[in-house]
Image 1 (cartoon, rainbow, N blue to C red):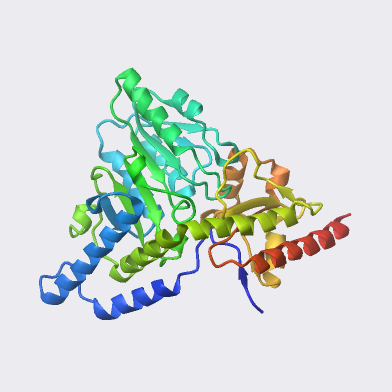
Image 2 (cartoon, helix red, strand yellow):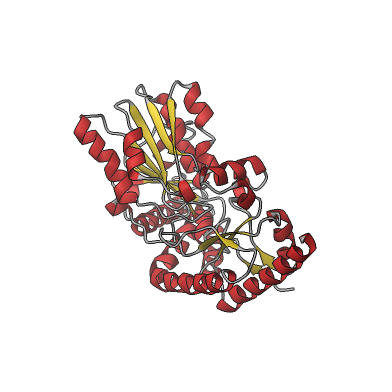
Length: 385
């Protein structure tokens, strides 16, 4: 049975060129990049060339990139570094943040921070709400570029301007703005050149790179949790995952070269799904037409059919979809927290499905998924009637 994959927001299938790059790097540059001998210097050269490629794709200087194991670790490096700062102040974040950020709330409170959570209808944060939440003692603001469940594309220029305007008007110290950009990379236009932020996290496997590798952009070095062996300019100790890093750079090169073609393809697949699914009784589209959503994520509800039932039925037919973030899939309470924060009713939340797709998703597969959903919804609705 052919598997038709619609869970790209959880992880994207790696590109053939990425797999080849990883294998070649592992075979040819197996030496430790920190070693002083010839092979070590060759490995170090590959490391720094890859860093330059990643930085170029993100729109920043290579010296501002630290390689990590992924978005979660990149977020943790920034958020945990608050422990070392004398000015801990207050922290502002959205009530619908990813678990790797929201899970830091007990830590923030333990070290004496006030935590302010912003409303996030459908995942969006309002610049006005952000402005009202700021204090002179605010030290950290956490934002996401694209919401991992709803696909909400934040108005980042307006949100960052709200912070910088507050600083100027109140003569307040600079507030660290951290951006979780994991779902934006390779999906929506993105460049650090135009954003006045202080740090941002990225993950390779969300844009068809290898798993277990990511990057942290830092305007200024953060205080490391552990100094380790001094790798990555002391920001992240431990021998670098050179094959993964080279694969990450290869994935970003491909995504940069094909971003416009991919954007058009995402819109075509999305249109097919919306046109087909919006005509099916029992399916509710949870993204409104007035807001901006990533073209690669579609959020629907098949309530009163439970999400897990529909996911299993579709899986049996060869379709892979999810109920939301993979990081929350093992904890229904985490997913319920995010959906409630987005203003989705408990009834609709019980049947939420996140359909996400990528550059290799075919129009035919999208049409087949819509037909499979129509058949299963009608069948189960009849049994529930």
